[in-house]
Image 1 (cartoon, helix red, strand yellow):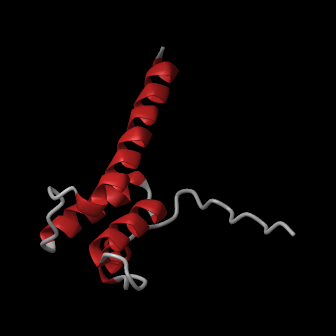
Image 2: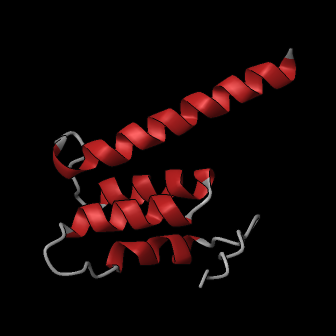
Amino acid sequence: MQRKEKQKVIDEVWTPERVRSFLELAPPANRNADFHRLLRAYQSMRAEDFADFVTMFVAAGVDLSEPGPYQTVFARMNAIMDEMERLDGAARS
C-alpha cells in the first residue's frame, strides 16, 4: 500500500522565534546533536530562513569549519545552490 505523499508547503511563515526553535531540537539516539539540528533545519526551511538559522547556529558556538558530520549536508546544499544558479542563468537568457 502506498502512502500519500506529504504536500509541500510553499511560502510558509518562518518567524525568528520559529527558526531559533531548531537550536533546541533533541536528536535521536546515536546522532550528533548539532548535525541533527543543522540537517533538520536544512530539510525544513526556505533558503533565506536557513541562512538565518546558520547565523544563529554559529552564534550559539557551533564550529562549522570542522568537516565531520557536516560534509554530507554541505555537499548537498552546494549541489542545490549550483542547480539554482544554473536555472536562474537559463531563465535570464
